[in-house]
Amino acid sequence: MKLERFWKRSQPPLIGLDIGSHSAKAVLLSKNTDGWVLENASQVAIPPGAVEEHEIKDFEAVGTALRPLLTRLGKKNNLVAAAVAGSSVITKIIYVDSGGTEADLEAQVQIEADHLIPFPLDEVSLDFEVIGINSTDSSRKDILLSACRTEHVESRVAALETAGYTPKVMDIEAFALGRTLSVMQSQLAEDMVNNTVAMVDIGANMMLFSIVSNGETIYSREQPFGGEQFNQAVTGYYGMEPNTVEEAKLAGTLPANYDFEVLAPFQSQMAQQIRRNIQIFSTSSGISEIDALIVSGGSATLPGTVELLRQELQIDAILANPFVDMTIADSLDRQKLLETAHQYAIACGLAMREHSE
Image (cartoon, rainbow, N blue to C red; front, side):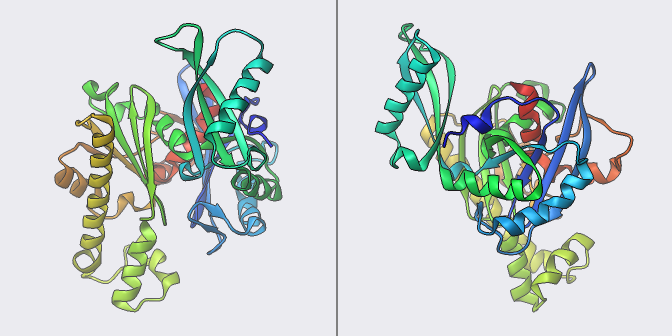
């Protein structure tokens, strides 16, 4: 099976759906003469164990959990863009001869993929995008080849179809996250708009680190670190029941000294992880200066997180708000959405996919 079925353009509107291990976030966007319009945004809880480290383990449970989102966003619209984790995708730049038909191009890509992909091609979903003419040989084209184990795609498709969605786009999380930078320009200093920006999305179990330069995602890396580790630390330190920690965290009713005993060590570890990712990127790319750090995900608003990252890393750290310059539909709770906007960065980037191509 090929990913082209899912990565072709569809007619708007398109729901951007970010499926995490604790929750799923959905965003519906449109465009008018003034720019982006946020038509709707909502989220639902995902049953424990149904999604682990970006892999859907129980597509029926996930599909059932997603159904209320479809109702909230309007059953007349069920076209959806979802994403697979970058760790499950192989991306490579290949070079093929210019000219010929589309069938010729596909044949060349298949030949190159057979040499480069370390799995049988009948177990892999392939997609490719023509980047442009090669800078050193005008008779050849640069092609971005993407390959993902078909099982990762099919589990998401099964969950979406169980919920009543029609999957139209299967993107990569890092690319979706990077796409949102274009709608957060007002959060950056003017001299940073086209420079190198680090984007970090801290989910329940995984942290996605991505570098965007001149509007293109040029580097990404994932690692097992997230808000669940904070929750487990609270559980172990205070003997709280696991299912009450998240509620207490959101309600601001955690034990009085948790900021010193649990929060500070967690934030220190977060800073170390991000610093290490920046060092790895700098070593591999030769780019030593990061102009800004945009932080998103559920753990981004733990008290003092952005300020600590700004101090520890000596970078202009910013809390992501992909809705900052959008017109928000009158039917939505504007204040509540702005308070939770940092959780919708990947979903927003997925919804933008329809309008950005």
